[in-house]
Image (tube, rainbow, N blue to C red; front, side, top):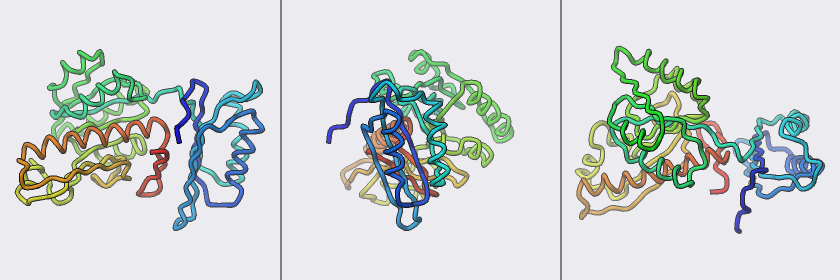
Length: 292
């Protein structure tokens, strides 16, 4: 089915609640009563956890639809009735994104290309790095570049600077585009639910330097990448998206690196788009992703 085009007047309602009869009917009736028309709707019942997930896109279908604040006040009554965790978003408002990168630029290059060509529905407000290697490319794209060097001794202070930047720029989402630093538990908690990381999918088998060369030595047949939300469990946060490609004995280590980088770029871009469009709901250590 072809999805309806998004307009400046679209709203996205995201709901998580205990699975109970009447949730969909209550939401649909509320929107209808407020002169709203549903243009996209997705539901998921987690039968194991007995939880219900819902994402609904709607727009005005008459002159009487209230503004966002009034809609939120009215919907709060339904939310209390069904014990909902919920949020309402104006689809036209793009999340403010800060990208973090180290020396590997492939994911950064890809994200900025997609952003400049209108494929990434976000507002990129800057790039932060612990190295100076990406400065010229970032500034050529007209974005602020923030150099925050880090050592073992200065890590706490550097993270304080990083978080101060997040606050000063009113950042909605931090994207770790091969930012080769392990975030402290405190920083992970401060960025919970709004920080996405990308890494190769060899973990935990091939750790450390040159994982693709390690994989070549072991004769792997599938390589891939994983995008996930960052948590205090290193590289084990709720998975948003993954991608894989088959390889064989004819591929060199350099071939594996190139293939792996392409997968990392596409997987990370999809994860950022889905987050920006409010398609992801965190379900404990997993995610529910609507409308892929």
